[in-house]
Image (cartoon, rainbow, N blue to C red):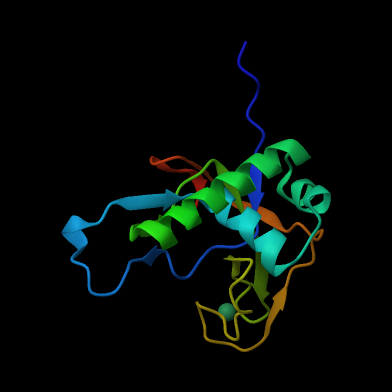
Length: 156
Ligand SMILES: [Zn+2]
């Protein structure tokens, strides 16, 4: 029986998603795909500097799975750096987590992924009177994704 899929929570939605070596025509480059969960493992380990145990808990996976994801990410990045490939960040079986905001003027509610700046104004009425809706530290799921085929639900 297949094991039930455990959602990999991701608290970062990258702004830059494509990298290539300078001066090499795109058509002759092999592309490597780094998934969002792999990028998140890199970010939690090497930028947030969490222990694997903590990072795994944050992503809602076992420590062993976290180790495997991190290992896979390191190998892809090594290949990218050493072999002149290009790197695209996309996909993975993940839940993108975000924060919810509320406009006190027009009552619009909207969500922003972690890793993006706090909104200064309401996207609807341009008011500055916007507040974060308090939730637990994890925020809320903005959308679930699966490899390649894009979104399962939510908006991103
Ligand atoms: Zn508003």
